[in-house]
Structures are given as C-alpha cells and as structure tokens.
Length: 175
Length: 186
Image (cartoon, rainbow over all chains, first blue to last red; front, side):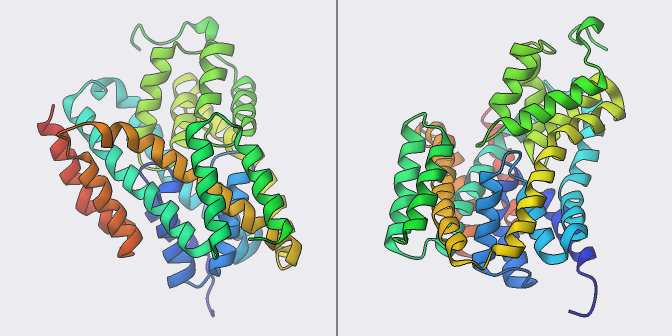
C-alpha cells in the first residue's frame, strides 16, 4: 500500500457505525467484508482472533474495532478506528438527547424502534454465522460452539467459565 | 427540565461519573447493561428504574453501540458536554488501555502455536455466546403468531450472511419496510 490507511480506517468505521443497529456485534460481517475481503487488512484467522480478544477483555464489544485498527497501523490506527466508530454516533447521541423528551412518546419513535428490533436480530444472527463459517474449521470447534450456545442460552453460567473451557480445549489441541 | 429530572442532591460530580462508568465497563463480559442498571439505579440511585429504561430506550434508538450511546446520553443529562465526555471516557478509557496491551502482545506473540490454539477455542466459545444472545432475542419474536418480524429478521440474515451484501444496503432496504410494518401494526 502506498498511501496511509488512516483515512480509510476512519471512513469505513464511521460509515458502518451509522448502520450498526444492535451494536458492534451487528456489524461484524460488514467489518469482516471490509477488513478481510476489500482492504486485506487482516486474514480470516486474525479477524477471528480480534473478535475473541474483544469478547474476552472487559468493556464494550466495540473494542474489536480498536484491535483491527492497531493491527493495521499501530497505536494511531487503533485511535483513528475507535474514533471513527464512536465519534459520529456519540455526537448524534449528544444532540438527540436534548430533544428526546419532546418525542419519546411519539408514535413514529415507537414504530422506528420496534421496526429496528428484527433488523438487528437478523444482523447479529448473520454475525454469528459469518464468524462460525470463517473460524470453526472442524467438527470439534463447531461442537464446542453448539454446546456453549446451549449452555449460555439455557443456564445462567458465567461466560468466563465458557471462555476458560474453550481456551483449555483449544490448548489441548483437539480443535 | 421536566419534573422527572433528578434532584440536585443526587447529581454526581464529574469524577464520580467517571468512576461509575469505569467500574461498569470493567465489571463484566456479555454486555454492560445489567451492570449499568445496578450501578445507576440500585447503588447510586441517580435514576429511577423508569428513568433508566427510558434513557436506555433512547440509546437503543440511536445508531452505534448502545452502551456507548447510553454513557453519552446519561453524562449529558447530568453534566452537559463535559458530563458526556467524562462518562464516555470512563466507559471506554480503561478497556481501551487493556485492549491496547493485549493488541501489542498479540502483535508480538500472535504467531505462537500455543496462543493461536487457545484463541481458536476461545473464539468457538465466544461464537456460542453470540448464538445464545440471538436465541434470547429471537424467542419472543418468533413465538408470537401473525407477526411479520421474523420475515424481516430472516431477510436481514440471508442478505448479510448468505449473499454477503453490504450492511448499508441491507439496512436501507429492510429498515423502512420493517418500520412501516411496525407503524401499521400499532
């Protein structure tokens, strides 16, 4: 690459943040499309690793963007990607918050919010699918994902234990 | 401000705001919402449960990460622009420092066989957790009869997961339809 990746980092993440209904986890296929397929910033493997590290470390899931930015352009890349992802939506949130009392009970507001729920459900489902397709490379990894999904859905187990179990199984070499 | 705004005695100072959001952000995996509620409604009593729910509804209404929107909206309400910046800084600052250290370690050791094995397992588990989240969101939508929402969810899924269409395209194609359906169903 002959030019700085910083404008692209900022621009792509700023754009996708505006469509990320349901949070960062709804935009993972789009991040994957941009980072792996279009810009060749990371490999599939590195992208999946960034997702795993972002899930395991405390704080909002949005820090996957920080990891991708760091991978592309070090500390500066991490900052630019994070600001791109959070900046525009934060400014919007700040200004909308001041007028919220005027429209919080408006029928159109309730229709918009209700209408966005199934969209964000489909997007997050697609995120899980794309991640499983690109990173669960054998039947055992797929099984681990399935068992984790059932445990997390049906019990109140602390996710930390699921991560520990996954890490240990990975370490043992069966995956 | 309306009568629902909090009494001034309950107003957090800027350092308190920063500390509260830093604690929330470092508290848990799998979503900061329950921790934010515990801190703001139960421990600090800065908001009633009702006010919290309304403020959170606003942050879900806005594009972008919900918890981040929430910190900005909450901070702005108690301390204007400075409050918004401080709450956001508390929520994002400590996790960013941690993740930058992890990123540097990954850049140095990411190629090590042992680390990549561990990460393969952690990734598989993390995907399972995401699927569980999807299941919990889907249950109320898919179990309701005479309801068009599952079709929208499936269309969004197929567009992104199967056809690999860009997110803005899928969003702009489906959101207006979905919102119109929600409007007529009122």
